[in-house]
Image 1 (cartoon, rainbow, N blue to C red):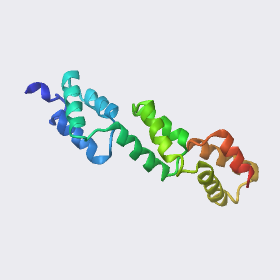
Image 2 (cartoon, rainbow, N blue to C red; image 1 turned 120 degrees about the horizontal axis):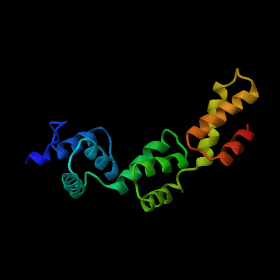
Image 3 (tube, rainbow, N blue to C red; image 1 turned 90 degrees about the vertical axis):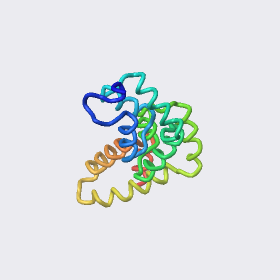
Image 4 (cartoon, one colour; image 1 turned 180 degrees about the horizontal axis):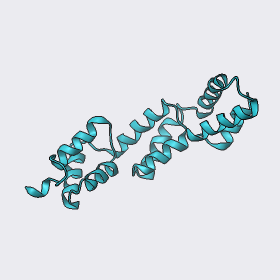
Length: 156
């Protein structure tokens, strides 16, 4: 029984995982990483992950869909969302599958054009060249592609 508890926490690995999941959905990789950080043994970590998957509390396919949906609402570019999913340990096949489901509904060019118009109004008092630079940088950080950004800015 002593192996179920870390020296740094009073929670069992399962209880700690539930605490993490209380705040937001997490990928299997994220849960595993956090359990290892809390010094739970690899065996206990794997048993906990198996239990969470068995109870369908950790499901990377569903996590991918939920994450994409929440990030599109921000709105972020598909490139950034894809990179975030990779850092969360999501398999490439899950990412491709989820993107293929949303591609028909999500028109990145229209979202980008709307963002450019909205942001351009906020940059009204700034010199045109400098405003374009700021707008370009802001959109790049949001994960839109270079070509699409240039196209949207040139349509101003």
